[in-house]
Amino acid sequence: NRLDTMSGRQYTAEEMSRIKLTPSEEQIVTVFQYTTDQPAHMLEAVLSMKFPYDKPCPYAGTQTIPINLAAQHQKHENLAVLANLAIQEGRPELLEAGDTKGRSPAFLAVCKGNPECLGVMAKAGANLRHACPVTWEINPNNGQGSLIDPEPRGFPVTHALNQTVLSFVTGTCCHCFKSGKSEGAGDMKTCARCGLAMYCSKECQRDNWAQHKKVCKRIKAGANLVTANSKIPEPVRNGMIGDFQPFEAEDDEDSALEEDDDPADYYDTSVVWEYYDAAAADWIGYPTRISRSIERLQELGSPRYMYKPGNKKAEGKEERGLSTNPPSFVSTNHIYYSDMIDRQIYTGAGRRVRRRVVGP
Image (cartoon, rainbow, N blue to C red):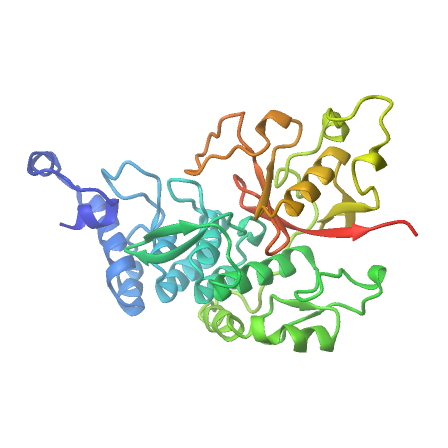
């Protein structure tokens, strides 16, 4: 029945015998059904009759609403119908509607490797700062698939989406990661087709095309479906407090060293790891202990380094099934060496990282 499909659970015959949908609840269920099972023009038809599109499915036990369900099922045309309506009715908060784990439609678009859905959400003005998933979804079936760690070579479309989103929200070159004239690059230019990827030079754009072409036209195709906005709104790069936890004093302390030890005897002190702060528009060094740990894990051949600012005991510990209320003893950040991204796994935020050699 329809409730089974919309809620993602199976109802027993006894449960169904007790469920009596009101006329307004019937309308809500119809919108859910049309979101996943019908073409866009049919969804538009029921919405034109003022059927509610901002309510969770009755008896489903979750707060998921149709716009998130459209992203889950990768129905980019239906996603555009719902996004256009939200914009027209002055409901931008609906663009961030989360699923049971708080994942927004834009986050799901990248997680599932769907450029068209990302184009829809970008043109609608969704917050792409929180669209950098720590795990990628493969072989989705009825809205769900298997989750894997980021693997650029095996999943080039998802990788290209991650890099494109990060370029857009941080204002860094999609190829060389430079951020403009301060690093000897030229004026940053945005890809004329997709409107998201940024480049510091024609050479970088040309050299990155092999990667970016996997998503560029498809992002544009999704964006073209959003007619309520004339162009993709500019990202907000200031006021990014909350995307990442601040570092604390203990992150600079290396308990492995004695007070009189010379760090140069144990570490290559000419190597520093840095992250790009989009609000400050500058590269900032990680605290000493964190930087040394990043370098050490890379030397050991690990695919990632996991940490939590201010909590050394959480280092290396993770929660595979992400929750909305994570325990205090697990890492909040995963740095993947394969794509040089530091991901805050509970906010969906991402920032670029780099390894730099200093000194003579």
